[in-house]
Amino acid sequence: MIASRFNVTVPDFPGSGKHLFYNTVTQAQVVIDDELKAIIGALPALPQKEESRTAIAQLQRMGFLVASKDDDTAALEKIFKNVWDDHSVIRATVLTTYSCNFGCVYCVEEGVKEPVFMDEKTAVETIAYIEGKLKEYGSKKIDVYFYGGEPLLNMPAIRTVARGLSDFALANDVSFTFGFNTNGSLFTPELIAELKPLGLTWAKITIDGPKETHDRYRPFKNGKGSFDEIIGKLEAACTLMPVDVNINFDQSNVERAPELLDYLAEIGLASKIGKLSFTPITATPKDRGGLRPATEMDRAMMTVETARQVIELSRLALEKGYKVDVGVQARACGMVLRRTSFIIDPHGDLYGCGAFAGRKEFCYGNFHGEEKDRFKGLELWRRCADCAFAPLCGDGCPFGAYLRYGDPLALNCTKESMDYFVRESLKLSYLKKKNLIAGGARSS
Image (tube, rainbow, N blue to C red; front, side):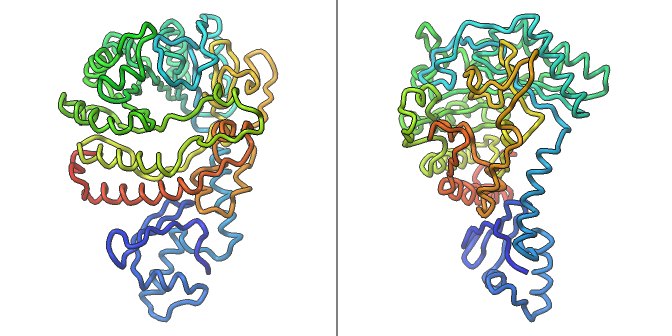
């Protein structure tokens, strides 16, 4: 018997001589003491004490201890096979338009934004394509994510797709839900009342700081600030349905985020917002396109510093009574690992990742031709099979690899930042569960 290579230890937490033990394959979590830690370190020699043998047996059942390295590898393979074989949910992202009424200073779709809108014919074909995939895989649920551009600029397409899939779900005894990522400017109570009966269950709005900062980062196209309008829409929406809020940050606005948290709490939204999240602003494919092919970007996706900032902001938000997901979660990239995940753009073109949508070199088909997806099903995770974090990051992020190296299949290792983020997230999650964070009783 040996210790799993997928164990992560947070030393001297929650106290001196105690250690938080976590397994990235089984997601099991337990606190062990110095004595048990030493026994694990001495394996395969077994302890003499009966109580220690009992503890070892329990740790084996939880996946912390395995019979051999081959068994450890088999457990890892099973994770990704289960993800690949999971046909229970069709996860479709539908881009209703590449147009937007905002002029944000950052945008992943910079370079592909254009005044093109999904028409009625394409919307009907979208319904048929999603229905066909459900029947092909025998799925029991359809989850649609409307995106853009600003998806609400094309309400006719949303209405057509939502009504069509809602009717199909009812007639075929399957579940259908949808939501959208919106800048919030068009998110009215009337729209919510219309769409909830069709399956609307969630929405996410981005606010990038207090008024001055947000208006600089996310103005309307005409330069007018959007903060006041967004806050008004958010206040009204939160009385009708769960609305998540995301804060995008870079080194210029991150210090202003606490002011936004204070303001939202002052107007009574801390307990009303669905979930709060924090996302580092990264480079875009347009930035990548301006570089020489062999150039490596200095920064792509999460770094140790941005991971630290996400943790600090999450802790602060919990203290102020916001709902924040702080647990460690496995990431399953729909572009590579999930066969039932896909993106449909306004033209009816198919993509594996929303960040690549509109860039024809990443389009793998459309409604009327053969699908040739060069990414789906690749077992890129095998090159990282000895890493403790492989079960969490999967095969890495093709988008991040493209930004960093110009090659979506390159190994974009972020182990250093992942190590920091996982350990600190485990601490934060533990304190939250034990209600040891100030204000934690108000969070969930």
